[in-house]
Length: 178
Image (cartoon, rainbow, N blue to C red):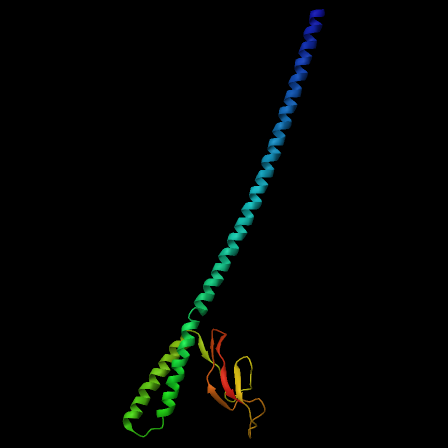
């Protein structure tokens, strides 16, 4: 019996060691699973962060592209305003001339001027209304002021140079007399 008892004690010892080893392995496996889950959560968080960052980048790029399309020709149009001014001065100077050739030239220049203004208007350029309107410092620059009969205070009497707005953005102030 002593052999049986020894065998039983050895078997119990082996069982206990096997159970400890199984429990250790099980604990390690649970630690690995927990670690993998934490890693997976980190990757998810990074993925969502990068996805949101990419979406913001796309939106910002789209806004910049729209602004570039809308106001990209601002510099060129601002230089063309001098051409418009010169065409207006030319037509004003020859408008009342009696010579038939000059009248024909006036008609041609006037047609070109209108076509040019229509083209610029189609690209977002608008004229600022001034004469007869109230003075607005956001759109008008007063060069002179004097009381005028039949006009209220702050009403624009004369426009020296037209002002323009490009797609809602001020391009040039109107130079006026109030």
